[in-house]
Length: 388
Image 1 (cartoon, rainbow, N blue to C red):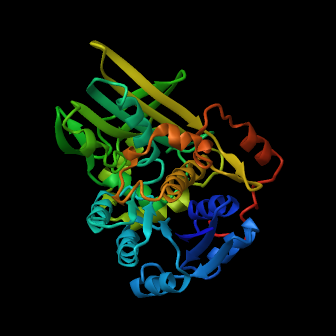
Image 2: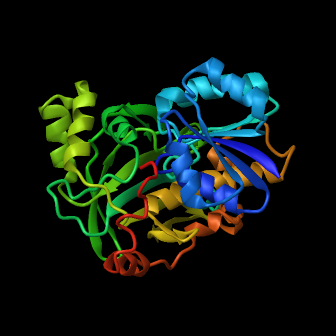
């Protein structure tokens, strides 16, 4: 049994802790700064392999004290991006493996610098995008003799949109605003470039349904750096229902809320509901030469909410938690294969999909499970008393 410290008992951390704790091989220390938050999640899981702690991980001394007292082998940060530098510093000082879910470019750069010369693994950006989308795109890239373009597209959407934004809050509001407001990395005409968020609006059709996609920050991860000298065009865009981008441009740019993000956060959390009935769309498209012919390959998948440990979890929770748990499992199950900074594209898609946690990305899911559970009133209060 290996001990893993999971920081944050929110939407994603609660599922990460449950997945690890109900599997064979891991004991979880679930920590949250909010009094009772980790304890509520631990009680809801009902597993004796999770122990709850009240811990403010932004306090470097407190986090160091916890690590020294309880000796985990790895830390998984499910905290907002601005907390990760502190967590990574403690991991580096104590020789622990480090994993996070951040989309923030600057935070990832700081983690990468801390990883220099480390014997332990530092694997940031382990969620969905960045994370799994880079692994899927990299698998397609390996099939080509010469690259032309790489497109990464991901969306976490409500199954039944009915508000003006055609959107529901399914993950961190801070992370969402960060994606919409920060510069975006891309490869343009063979050169690294920063492009504006909410620009590059395009129409995309998947299985006969139309969506829009536009630039957002962070989703490219380290893939651009890995293949920048081999590809003409590479970019990441977020998938939404048509019309969403125009509304967000009005809020972020027209009303200047990109410069008052706390106000924007309050508006979104007050006006846009959460939902467990979502769908995650993963779309990667690569063009280039194969055997002298110009060809295209695609990876397209839809992931729906799933029942884990007797409880319905949203698709974004499942895909994000499965992403980091599968990467952690591969690292800890293969000591010596990885060290220092590890990019997501170093993991093979086949290894992820065959992993006990990565299996949640399997094709062929539907919205039937979430529809039936909601219709029978089995989800509305399933989180009662637990941290959201």
